[in-house]
Image (tube, rainbow, N blue to C red; front, side, top):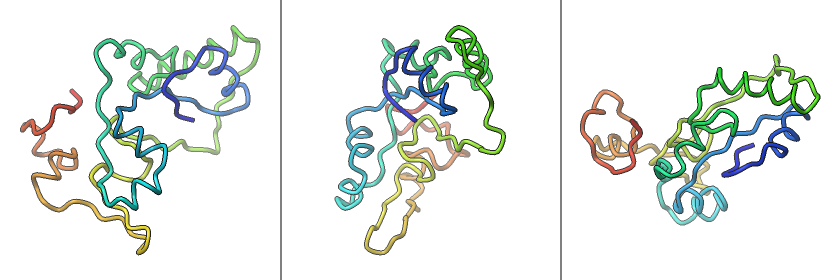
Amino acid sequence: LEVQWASETAIAAVERCGGRIRTAYYDINSLEAAVNPQKWFLSGKPIPRRLAPPESLLDYYTDPRNRGYLADEMEIRQEEINLGQLMGYNREEAKDHEWERKKPDQVFVGLECGSLVSMADRKVFLPTNPVLRRYYGLDKENDKDILADHQYA
């Protein structure tokens, strides 16, 4: 479950039932795409690259107690155990389920930023232009050129 903000009790409720929760920042374009993906895909717009949170929210999204998407996974696991002890339940690791993770700038699991989704053809098209590939963070070898104001450090 990915949400923009969650209280400690909400986090505990999800984890007590065996779920996983992450808090993640969504800028206005990313939020619009995530709220109604079908409308976004039908509009013919490429999947946006999710912007980094503003400096005022960076502490929240890097804090493992908040299950921030920019926090270290090992620290999050430790905080899951700590919260379980605090709230009186045992947090058991789902051994048979491997959680698929998104990159910090990714809006949808399994779909790269900059992709066009054709609902009619049931196909996903990745950008091939080198400038677009760098802009959307698809070319890691050319990362030294800054082409956008939303790149992650």
